[in-house]
Amino acid sequence: MQALRHTLIFIATFLSLTFFTKCNSPIPTEKNIEETALKIADNIDMNSINLLKKYSFVKRGDLEFWQQVSGDSSLYSFSLKTAGDTSELTVNRPYNFIKDFHTNYRFDTSNYYEFKFSKLDDTIRKVVKVTNQTKEIKNDTVLSIKQFFPDQDPFATIIQLTDFKNKYNIVGTSYYNDIGDIMVFWLSPQFKLTYIPDTSKLNPKSKKFWLDEFDKGKHVKMNWSLLKVYE
Image (cartoon, rainbow, N blue to C red; front, side, top):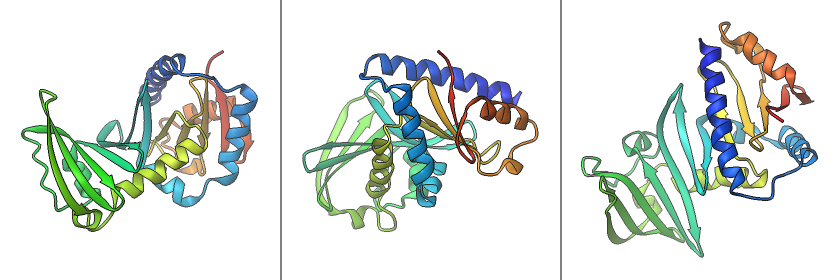
């Protein structure tokens, strides 16, 4: 059942990725994809791996966001937009978000489902709250990042994630912590790069499925396999 569940997830991901890729060009060649896969395998560091184990990247059309996933559930998501010197951080499901990014700001989730923080330099200049009817309530402010987020800066975290995504033109990432130590990088709708550093950690119920998938691909490096999922 677990293998079937992840197969269905793959199919849904294919459809989503195919849709947005048709709207965006150019499409990388197979040679470009293989070169990118090797660059990731050769250059990714443990700090990036640990961060990508915590957050998955999703892209649907022009919409891009990072989400923290536990099993099949998305705990929260956040995204970043930049315009000139201003960065805007959008947060959904903040009751989970604040477990990672402690804040002195009070999220009113009874009336608002989405929150946007606009930053210039090291200062939050505006907070936008979006109601369930998608009405935006804007409040100007002048508070430092440290005053808003005293322990950990979410802007710094998402910028690090986004820099990695942009560097390799990644269109999606997933970490399957519920079935073992498995990371998947979507390099295009056709190609996924799978990283399995330790097969002994795979769930016995789905181990054969994942190892078969891994062996179908081109082994670009030890523990790394690039699979063309459809023609």
